[in-house]
Length: 379
Image (tube, rainbow, N blue to C red; front, side, top):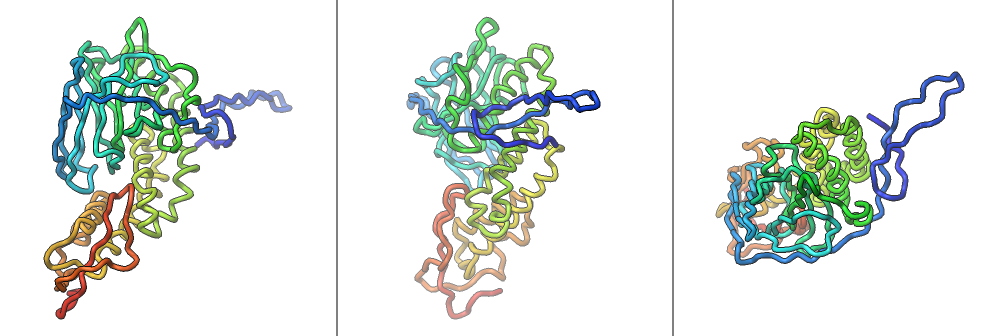
């Protein structure tokens, strides 16, 4: 793997030529790709939703599909896999009527997905099928539900020219700008001019134009970027070292670490696979999986304290069990109905000490436990 020299400056993938030849007149080494530390310059856009066309559906743990058609005839299909959710979730999808202030030229097609900022533990897909039937030239975008932190997003290199698909790891505003043969999509200025605040957004923005152009070339039967693999490796490795590796121990040692960093780390891992770099990053993927699994087990241990009421496990226990099962845990171990974990209870329930709200990534509520009754826990 190429060693990255981290420098501060404008965010981009840089092709740095090592110009000096050795004193013996040998051929210079091959080019090296470097990724520079980005200077965040968050951009807020104004998005108008076509609320009359909103569709909603309860998506079970087994996954599901949601479809809607925009006023212009564009079709949107959201597919949530069986490995994405910690709990059954009511999902809504609303077509966007307009987005003002985005530095991209092309016809805009997008949706607002709710619940806003919902984290997914595997990628959902959003397929956009324009009424024109031509999505050859396409680049994605995303922003928070209020339009803040607008950034570009890479299309998946799957499917045909009639639609474009995006892999999603959270819900917010998502969509695409489409061009034509005569007028492809265009980015005004440099992506560094509107760099988002979060490293997950940096990854999306850095990959967007690279993979959008590669997809278009493949659809047109043209040669792609011969250096694409090196660029992808440089970007993914840089963000692993910058944003994931420093938190591996924290994730492995306690639930709070998984709460804060787990789903994003898993998103990075899944991205390496989706862009065809899974083998390259197999060792680092194992590090991530090991750390998240260890922290997720701590979430389970905390959730079941002091015991699980015989009247039934609460949502926090169910979510902890679900998370561990999604990570490959044993259904015998992470079973909320295990007899050895249950207890008789008082009528009054109390908060279990030292178990706080598992915010953001896991979406846990406060842990609720019950006083152990006269029979006590069956452990």
